[in-house]
Amino acid sequence: MKVVKIIGFLVICLLAFTCKTRKEDQVVEHDDFRHARPPRQEGGRRPGPLGGGNRVRNYVATDSDEAVEKLHPAFEAFNKEATDIFLSNNGKTVTIETTGLPDHETVYWGKNHELYRDEPSVERTPSIMSSNNNAISLVVDAAPNLSGNTINTNMGTIGVAVSGASIFNDQEGGGALDRAAASLDWTGGHIGPGVYHYHLEPKAFSYNDDKLVGILRDGVFIYGRKCFESGDYPTDLDASGGHTGVTQYSNGKAEYHYHIINELYSTTGSYIVFAGPYQGY
Ligand SMILES: [Zn+2]
Ligand SMILES: [Zn+2]
Image (tube, rainbow, N blue to C red; front, side):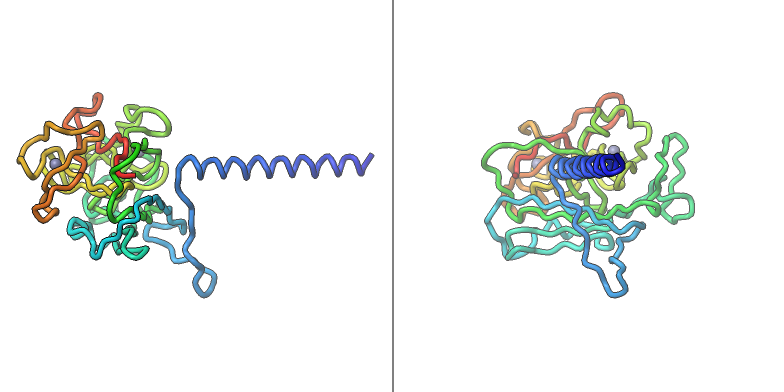
């Protein structure tokens, strides 16, 4: 009788373990990223990014074989304190490593930080920058592949902004963003759960203008609501907010890029950064 009980217990343990493993696999597949960890250093500690925690979220998504010789000039505009950006894979890809910590004010810095901004109307989520791991590593095509099908964005980081922080889409925890809108700070960002990220036009560095906003996971740059070439709101955008034209970083050449679409989102009084789909995968 005792032996039967022990065997039963072991079977239950095995089943529980299998289910857990399967579930984790599904999450990774669904989110299309890998939780790769940096190698251990001497003493067993992993190099932790600023902001606590020791896990760097790695996003690798590439399909273009075209190589480039140097970084696109637009990368010069990224926050140098937060980001480390370099060519990888023999010039076929660009690796963007960031602490995820932006160079602007927000209530999410927490009271004792020099960039803390008092925002009484924001229903702040529990985390602040220093209690959070905001680090991201992104590998994108150096030359985006604009042929083939479009791909919908997923939850989580869909791009890195020039501030160094993450860009998310128009969803929050599987639902529409409206429900979380009260927790967004003055520049359309918040924490939680996960990294600090923007959903809405990031006014701290692009507000009703043609400024560079960031780069998305398909390797395509995204700009503000206006276009450099016309100085006005573009009228020829595709479903993703993209079109081909000259930008302030394209050396006079026309290239495909996205804009924040100039349509107010719900009751937020602001504009969604990017709702997709990706054109450059
Ligand atoms: Zn969010
Ligand atoms: Zn444009």
